[in-house]
Length: 298
Image 1 (cartoon, rainbow, N blue to C red):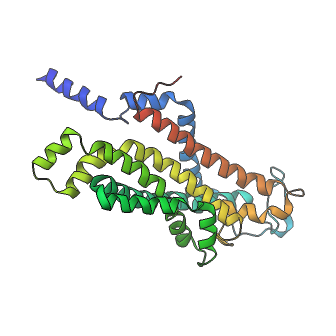
Image 2 (image 1 turned 30 degrees about the vertical axis):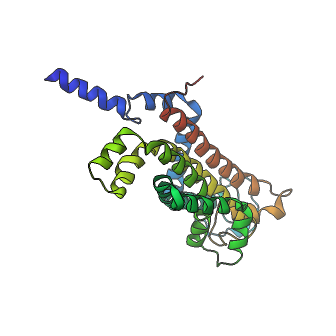
Image 3 (image 1 turned 90 degrees about the vertical axis):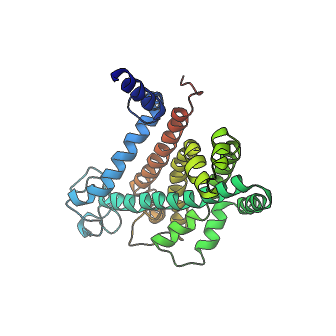
């Protein structure tokens, strides 16, 4: 009896890609850049959530006597901006907004792309062709110009920016999911489910979607990076998150006039954007390797 239970436990361990002792998790741990990215993301998220509560200054506190204070030169660790506001406090509060926009836009775009891609891949025929031609039509528009054109017509706010980014970044997800569903719908377990009378919805969400989850997870991590960059683009150009609400993008936009006299105003939010986007890309690479056993790490 104990031998049978041990065998079942080994099977479950091998089948679970993220279990501590599973091959998938071991591959992820061996990917040093992915581990660095995961640690950096967790650290940045915790710092942005809890950091502002631990600082002596808020992001709106104005210390007029410390205007343009450089980093590590006084009570403000990372210096101050032209109004005398603490850069570290503003970076952390801006991180809350930028990361929240990234994660929220990712969830909405993933849900939209998964639904459209799954329907297109499962039904094929006229329905699938019409949906994928719509995806192709959306992909014809350069996303950055589409973002700027639509953002110029709407009132800028965090919810509107989230919806704007999500509605212009789901098309690649739909293509990935559609290709996966088309390759899986002829598998034996799907044929068996059809023979047993399972509904189309049950087959799609209980049989096909769980088996297509690996590329979806990778796409999700890359989608967060894309959303953070997109928010930075449109905020930098003045169409995104508006002051006094800070974001990394509008901090860069406000620093344009001081690149020579106070370069840290642009370097610090730029470094935060670079670290966040690079970390998510590293995690995406690590997940791709971990979820595909045919890929060997060097």
